[in-house]
Length: 77
Image (cartoon, rainbow, N blue to C red; front, side, top):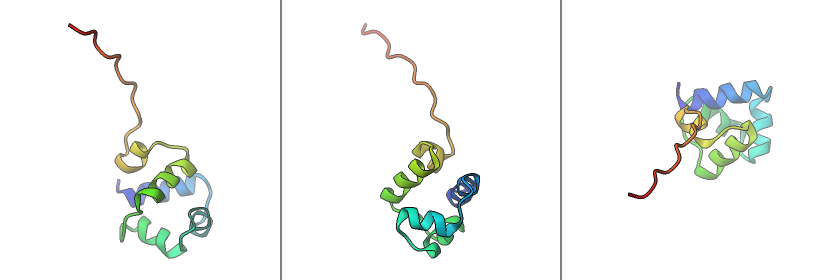
């Protein structure tokens, strides 16, 4: 799944229109459309805001990976 497909999926899960999401992010609806069709990629500040709006991590949004528990650091030898 591409980044654009994930943006579209999470937007629809939140029952938001492209216009709704554009208003929250302070971008044009056309920008959202370009992101969702992989015509362009959001800048970092918009990716951060997208993850906050969708309630997911950047890893989930960008890499399609849920955050996994990190093992405890091993003791010094």
